[in-house]
Image (cartoon, rainbow over all chains, first blue to last red; front, side):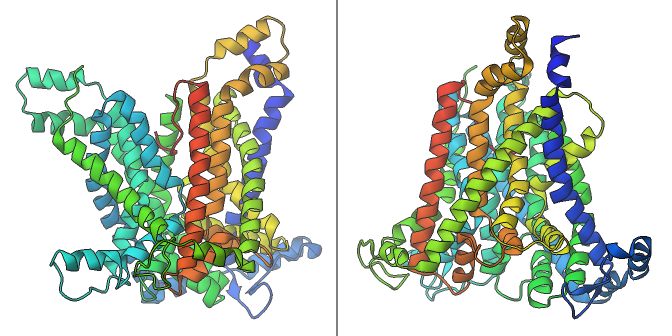
Length: 304
Length: 269
């Protein structure tokens, strides 16, 4: 037997595979199936607040009773009430706009990092990663400090003579965009940097030798080669932003319709677990395509 | 080749870093503000840190948070390292695609969905919510990050070292402990610290899965912050940022001392 196989086939390998596999089935797959089931149940004044529940002691009859009690009512509610459609659309809009802004801001930063002297690059990467490890909540709160009516932004703008009366930044859409762009910037910059840094610079020399001006070489050589990084960065930002809840909650005030918040309110305030579950299922369906694309990119990048 | 770093490159990197760091720096400076008015500067003082120390709720929340972060990061490091080994060493085993999908999905999954589904499972299984449920939830989220960090290290790993050990008669388990583990240790440590700080930071999943006696710091901060900016909150945020920053620098030092400056970072590379 090959030596490699000895390491692969042993009991150690079996534990290495089964422990995380089992964990993910119990804490990731099964919970999701339960959400799916509850999204098909009805709200009830009970504990837990939905019917039907599975009565295992009744055996097969219990399963039949459960299946008979399930229906698509919650999905009909989601379709008939405008507030849900508006929330989904608004989330997609906020996610698209902020991802576009992130790409516009993130690309020059990543490009500058990739062209910096090699020794400096490690430090720059560290500096961009560091805020990513800091709590989202704290980073959003930091902006609340700056954006409050008597805060630093208004005072700087007033000192510069740009504004004459304090601007109310909180709550506003502008504040939401600032908060999102600030929080997700490292997620955009790092994948972009990773592809730009690997780029073969001789290609640019070749383009220059053949008489291409620098902007044209950038547009026709650098940009196409960085597309995998663009894809990873865009997905890494777009998907979580769509479900974002803390940022719109703190910076956008109570009337911001984003789907994460609508779910949160339905669950915690309305105690309507079945509708909250249906919102989650639809949100996941909406994000299924981008998530699948991201997983493919991720698997390829790790395995090549 | 000769890199030409244009003024535009320098300015965009400098502005980007300023944008990332200024808000946090301002927050930290204002935590030492003597004035109780959050918008006015009244001189340096550590008054708000003293106020914080007297706050029993905050202390309980801090203890709960550090306990959950330690427990979940430990579990996540073991599970995540196993998963990384399985993904890189076991070839194309049956169910690999599903396994990989479950590893990469939580990385981008909106937290509300993860939080809601875990809570509903705990309710359906009739588990009392508290320390254990939040720990399990954080383990699930953070093990995936550990997997990605360790996996990227294993991908550049020199397999001939292990083969040499086994050719010399070393049994597989011993080879793993004496050759493989020390070589991937920096990534494992970095994964642990990443898991620790992610757990310490999470508010959404914790809010869903928590119960009596397990209010974490972010849950406390989140409910306080709804009532506006307060100097004590600036102080607790400063402490959290400092703790996480120290952990990160430790991780960076450890990985620099061992390998050739491997970077620890985001899932997508």
